[in-house]
Image 1: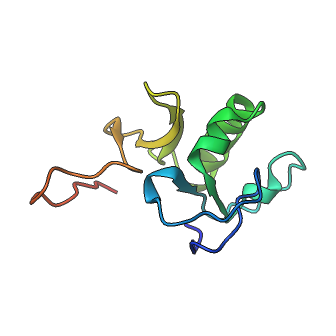
Image 2: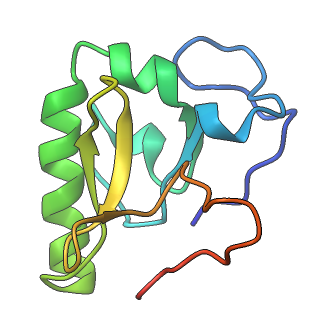
Length: 112
């Protein structure tokens, strides 16, 4: 996963990512060579910007194919959640991995 700092700029809007972790989504290094998507390789952006991008659906398809090719069929995948935001889910368990916090007092349950 990319190293993310609040002062980094979103590649879509140019504003700093800021402190609101629920509006930040990061991407691991996959050595993407597609001109439309290479700037998202090993990076982070505002979830709201990515979710409104006109190439969002094409990127999700591309990213998921690259993740499966790199990490296998159970690799986490991107999807659009019920709120219309791009998120990660664990394809094996169909559970959401990013931007979801467990109820207070409960540890996160990530099955990698």
